[in-house]
Image (cartoon, rainbow, N blue to C red; front, side, top):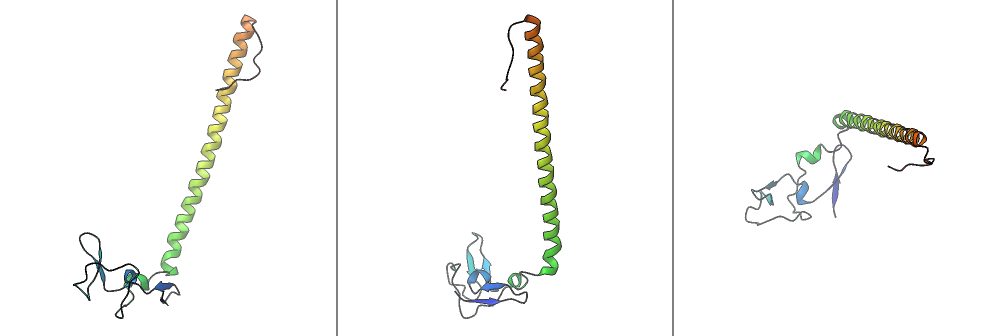
Length: 122
């Protein structure tokens, strides 16, 4: 497969999917504006008139992508920390509830003098 390098140093495959002359019809099939008679263009096909699309020219623009990526990374990190904190709190709450149940059973059993409780499964 042939490829070229855009202005940001990203490798762009020379295929119809990255061409300037592609468009999508109502059924979302890829078509070529240079060859209107062609039914459907293959994704890995290309012709001699291939030119890089505007979207592909801007791929890898570090000035635009870096703040968005940094913001996304910060939000993911915050979400992960929040999730871990919730899990920890839920475990502590579950442990406390289990401890209370065990204590109540012990008091009931001691009052009736039946037997000892060694473990309790919820």
